[in-house]
Image (cartoon, helix red, strand yellow):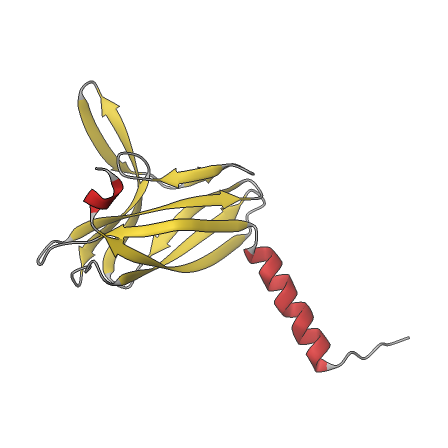
Length: 149
């Protein structure tokens, strides 16, 4: 027996399926550090919560020639930043990207990031099963001093 469903029902089912897949990862408190004229790099910060084991594997932004996932470590009394290939997102945990910790570096900026604006970011998340998810966000630009640093 063949069932024929109205197109509206199929469309609604597809929308529901897309929202469930996107619902595995939640991004909150995203912001980008504002820059001054001629500054060629800045950082983005946010909180990422995944309902399944996953990892942040790539970041893109139209305003940056390169976007890298970074970690900050201490080497004696010296703070070092370095690019890492991915950032683990354990199921149920909130991973905070913050000044002095993990963050996203936006390099080779094509324009100034003004405090009153927002920066579009594309995050690529990969689940433990290898499924990839693309999340687009607009992160407001703020001065670093507003966050106690």
